[in-house]
Length: 317
Ligand code: NDP
Figure 1 (cartoon, rainbow, N blue to C red):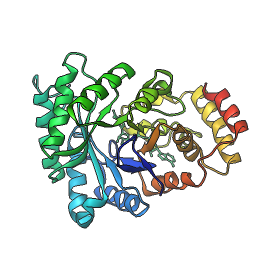
Figure 2 (figure 1 turned 135 degrees about the horizontal axis):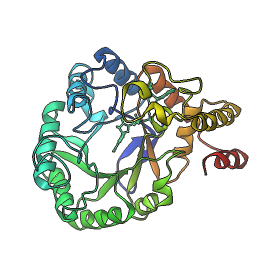
Figure 3 (figure 1 turned 60 degrees about the horizontal axis):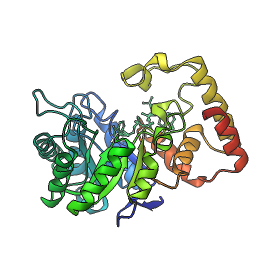
Figure 4 (figure 1 turned 45 degrees about the vertical axis):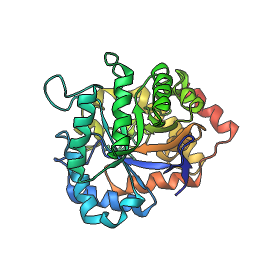
């Protein structure tokens, strides 16, 4: 495993991190979850990413990971970076989502209980709340760190302008913003085009990109149809309607370029994300152990030739 420094902080993260958004909920096979976490850790993946609402049902991914921590990783807590987030809908009423201090701290307390932990390593504001003063949301992150319930503060899905403001507020509070978690992949390049990566770089903030495989579109998963059990058939965040002929054609063309590099498409997609100097880590999802192994093997070839990039850019620009 290769470990990159997170922005200008003292913390290093593995270039491949594992997220528990899908396949770690109450309805998923627990032994498979356990096997994936164990294999990931054995391969050097020290960072596991969660959020209050991961499941389904919401919260169950934290509960399951808490069980795995207790049964398999109890002796390894200090070797792990565990994150959680609050921002999306978690419970009814006016205090169950967005960015108020009331919600953020209540949610963090609930997450710690489900995880069976005294602290998380990174606590994120999961989305920018246009209605709550940013000082209040950042104040909640600062409080989480000062109270010892989190070691570092992060933001996710924040646009460039809010990122710069958040960085300024947190810096003034003495709790620097460690990391930003945006969606970034070959097919979804908004953080690059809209200045989020630059805002992070300018402010010493690390970047961990979620959905680097575009939920499976940047893999060979859908090249020959939509397999039973794939995310497009079991989850509503990727719909079969998104697997259009055009999408498959582009993935097939990218797959040929990957083959020329001696890689799988998924590995080339990870290498592409990691080739951006602002990016600290690619945050993958997985439904089986072999996908985690594939991801870690991407590290064998992270560099691109100019000719490869020209061919790729023609397909994804
Ligand atoms: P990816 O883009 O990595 O998609 C993962 C999916 O791609 C897998 O579940 C699997 O789908 C497929 N896949 C992975 N590897 C392979 C392979 N080698 N061959 C074929 N198919 C493969 O990431 P996710 O969308 O899962 O997001 C990753 C993490 O990012 C989340 O778990 C979460 O921690 C974080 N995240 C954060 C968000 C935020 O708002 N901050 C939002 C979304 C995610 P299949 O199930 O079909 O096998």
